[in-house]
Length: 518
Image 1 (cartoon, helix red, strand yellow):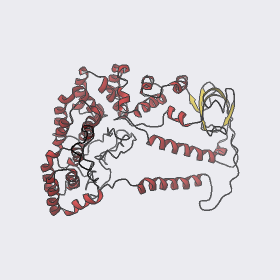
Image 2 (cartoon, rainbow, N blue to C red; image 1 turned 120 degrees about the horizontal axis):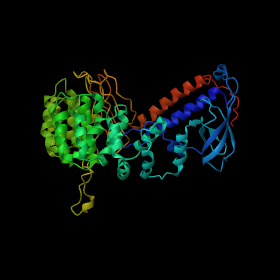
Image 3 (cartoon, rainbow, N blue to C red; image 1 turned 120 degrees about the vertical axis):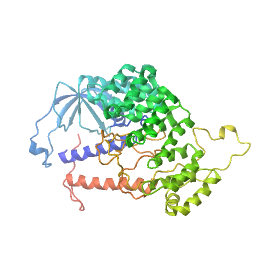
Image 4 (cartoon, helix red, strand yellow; image 1 turned 30 degrees about the horizontal axis):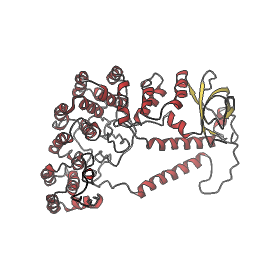
């Protein structure tokens, strides 16, 4: 197999891993960074541990020539973890290997296409990593497996620490909570205090501390919340959610004073507080939603940020503030113009007859914004009224709001022309109904503290949209054209790049000699 062909296969492998990671479900404040060892092994036909027998030296000029087959390294299987019907202990494997050749360590090797295996590049393992990998196939396929990975969080072997974190990140919140009896509280405290621990991992540790912590931890959390040091407030959304898990409703006044009522609060901090409230409105189950709604109402006194919570108030059916919503629309000027579309969507979701009358009133003030809301944001038809004799179990519950519509936040004019140019804090979405939301920077003029990849979710409808001067253009719902067209476009670009790398003509048919597959 030539180097160019090998590079092609590597690109395909990385692309498949990226697709797999993008579909991973995460715990409320965590975002999986990469595919875990367990996921990779599950997707492969053959998984073995091997020794390096021979690794020939390849002249550097031959690496890029692509004219002849490169010499392959020889490995000997010493342990079969998967695929016994296709490979046995003692079998020899020849593959291309460009890593550092060390005969004193073990290698993890995986392959697809069982009967005629196509091998990926071998991965060198330390003794500790070897012990880690060989135990993975025997772990239960349920949240109790987290007990094993807990011992590798912040491990000295960064590869294992990252894999252990990703195992937690892809586990639903209920699965993380199931580990409570086995959680190591003192270690979690040490990690959240450690400035060298990345914010993404601190979010996991705060999530765990929220279910295994005690009242003794509250002073530490309050100190972090009040700190002026950005590093001490890293992972603030999860920190605040943890604080409310421990202090419950009694903790809301402090959060309101620091982030909602305080108009000098940095945008990133305020948004993190909203994320924490959302989490408790969906997954927390320790604070009544009615009390959480009262906290979010304070944001209506800040018109420039009110659109961040209007969809939540509609989703949680807070129709008591309808008059305040109408007034927000009426009072909006050029600096708060973006609030008008969310207000109209709130009124469209409201079942009260006064809401329809209000929309017609607002249409006379700004017909363009009303038309935009009605054109780009659809409202599902109301369900048939329940019959008077309908069984009580069929009635809407608190967990399933009657309204089937959740308004989507529109792009703002001058999204980033704010006076505050504070350092960016990346926050994640704790919405439980879908994959972990993407962590986006909240200011274009500042550097993100940490690039933590993630994914957007249809339920996360109040995420700030990172686009400058969008001129109020609404964010259209994802449709089938977008879902299929974007991947196809990316695939075409990758195809062109791959053919260029392989040295093949772009538009002509090329004859390529058959490659020998070991």
